[in-house]
Length: 178
Image (cartoon, rainbow, N blue to C red; front, side):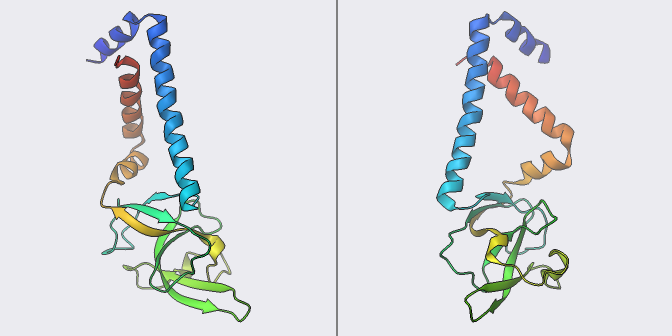
């Protein structure tokens, strides 16, 4: 089967091959434009995230795909599910707001906790940080698709699987002539 794919590529003339490469480039650039458009509309640096652990069960399970917004004028509320980044950690965390701490000058700080965790998130925050602020928030969960993100998890946990999927997709785009 793999040999027949290579034979198909060899049989293409240069113009067909260039057309397929350009088509692949258009698909990739379209995906990037859609992503950037979602960032603008949702005001979130990451409008879609995958839940990576079971800390939010039963609300969200590992592999659920979350849709986020991060509108600056909306206040943070207790019970709301937020996605936040902590200094020193690259991966955002999905947890529920547990407590609010409002100061007289109008600043709001809050504490989070995973629904399935026994303690709050202070142990996850940066050293010396006891509360989160709005600048730590990547977005707020507005909807989800169950288990759709498992593909992303498998691709990160099994790099060979990721390269195989990407290679198959690339070959398909190059060989597919429609």
